[in-house]
Every structure is written in structure tokens, then in C-alpha cells.
Amino acid sequence: QSVLTQPPSVSGAPGQRITIFCTGSDSNIGAGYDVHWYQQLPGTAPKLLIYDTTNRPSGVPDRFSGSKSGTSASLAITGLQAEDEADYYCQSYDRSVNANYVFGTGTKVTVL
Amino acid sequence: EVQLVQSGAEVKKPGESLKISCQGSGYSFTTHWIGWVRQMPGKGLEWMGIINPGDSDTRYMPSFEGQVTISADKSISTAYLQLISLKASDTAMYYCARLKVASTDYFDYWGQGSPVTVSS
Image 1: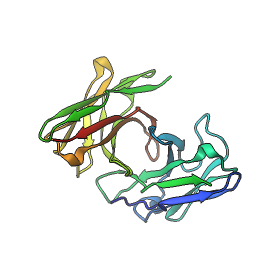
Image 2: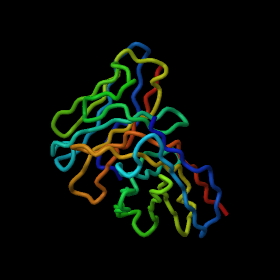
Image 3: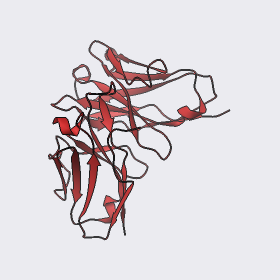
Image 4: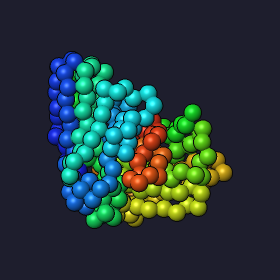
């Protein structure tokens, strides 16, 4: 089971702002490690969405933003669009387990 | 343009073995670790292991150690994931991804995935 917990689903109407939380612990996010986010559109491979907690790779719209506080991180999507309907995963590093690269449980975003 | 191209879909019987390939292009293959990630049907992402194609240094997630073998042939810019003694529970999509070494490492480019079905 993952050490990073996300809500199974989040929904919002077009144009709204939604936030996805990724809850960790003192051995990962709380230890100061960065958080990264991936977007997985239906039937496709994951794609890097946010790296180093707050940075967007080239080509990712600025509607997507990341932050963290304490043992949690969050991904915000503003101006929600139909094309944002996808699964989103956080990822960080955990120093307490041998599986250093840990993914969150994943969140399905539905655009109403 | 960085690309990771994986081998195609496989259908295997329980007990058989399988080797999935991941060929990198558009960058120096030996300068970035390659990771393998499993996604079981309807489930999330699980990191399986990583390899440094430059020297074949390999690390595994404990739950996958002994069940899979990760290797690489730098002469053809290709990494491999071998699954041995397949079980129905190995049915999944397997992704390779390039590891970006940073203060907290992450996977910056992904292959398209290799679907594996294990069924008698």
C-alpha cells in the first residue's frame, strides 16, 4: 500500500477550481522532499505535470499549480476544462522504506 | 525529442517468462537511469525498480526483488524488464520511464506502456 494518500475522486464544473491533496508523513513530504505530479489521461501513459513541488514542464498550462505544507502537498487546477478529466498521481521519496520512489494512491478528476 | 518506445502487447500462460523492452532515443541513454512502473488493471502506479544503463547498477523495490530482472544493453539504448514464472496477478500495464535525478528524483519521460495478459 502507498505511503502517500490521495482522495479517490474529485469533481468540478467547467471553469471551477479544484484541489487534490496528497497526504504523506514525516518520512517523506514532511522530511522536506519535493513532490511531483503526473497526469494520466484515459488509456495513455502518465505524463509529468508538476516537478519539484511547484514547477511546470514546458507545455503544461499555468492552470496547474502545486504547493506543499507540512506533511501534505496539493495540486490545484483552475479554470477546469473537459480535457483535464484524468487520473492524477503524486510522487515523492520516502526514507523509511526501501522503495524509495513512492506514488500516491491516485485521484480521478471528473469534469461535470 | 526524448522518446521511450516499448515493445508490444503480450499474452502469456502461467509459469511462462517474458521480457519487455524499452528503447530510448533523443538523448544520451547512458546518462539517465531508467525505471519500471507497474499498473494493474484499474489500479495505481507502483515503482518496480531502476537501472543505470551506463554500468547496469540496479535497484529493486523489495516486493519485486526475485520476481523480476531489470537489465540494459547500452549498445542499442534499450532497457529490459524480465518477468519470470508469470502468474495471473502479473496481468498489468508495464511502463518504463526516464529518471531525472534531482533533490527528489522524478520520472520526466515515459514509454507508451506494454500491456501484459497472463491467462491459461
